[in-house]
Picture (spheres, rainbow, N blue to C red):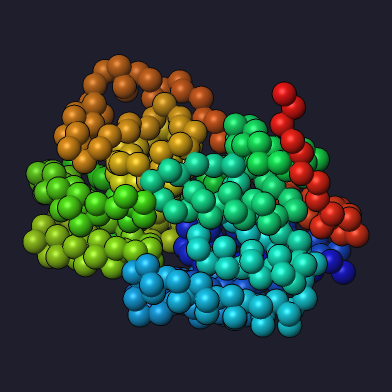
Length: 381
């Protein structure tokens, strides 16, 4: 029986990977192995592994986070991850490992798989996020991977540009789309009860992660919060920044902001249902999270994307790009008649409701005897 090992280190990954795990688990010819790591196991980030184990057996929990998330601390986390992942994978001996995205934890995992000669199936390669080191990590994982599942045809082109064989690259669209299509969302009243909030006229869903290249987080985030303090008639719902460098600074700044602004509230983790239900009814998503770029189009909810962190990603027409100093202009654009008209009929480039099944079928049928024998395909002149 073919053993497929799925690894998740963050809340954002898990809700995208969950349906793939369901597809693998339901297939009598496959065995699901599940490894949980990273911020899932951190109390500070909501101990989100508990949500995972409500539905799935977790084969291994791999603790890798240290006390510091500065550059040196992250380097130490990577070294710990390599040591621990190598031990766990040597024990589980999977036939294929599934990696989603571009986190440094996944770079450590991919390195281990490469050395142990375990094939990698990489989800969401070919994307760009030029304001973060994740961009280089993503492309590095692509070169270490044997299979590629991409969210848009433009991303497929980039994976091919990196020298990968076309037979190994599969356009599957967004994993979020099938989750959203199947989800029974909470109503506004239900959300108020769940979150302990009485919503004001407008709702803004806010996630702001560190910008890990040419970072000006400490300077710019203060400006961002100052602009948000002017939105007195709005409910400001924050989720925590991730565990990159300056993530702790951002989270502590939000905590202080929420203490001084009664209309603002910070959550360690909302979970997929509450997060997406909020996205559905929000006036806009604010910040620099990939969820704003990739998930908001399914609801036709506007997204104000701030700064360079997501620069390079394919965008739908509901995205308003701005820098910190132009945030006020972006907020005004939300109410413009031309933008509202544009929201009615734009095309979502990530639409696909069968991504998980498509991925599972490839994982099930790929020839394991030759999967590691990759060729480098030069670009034809």
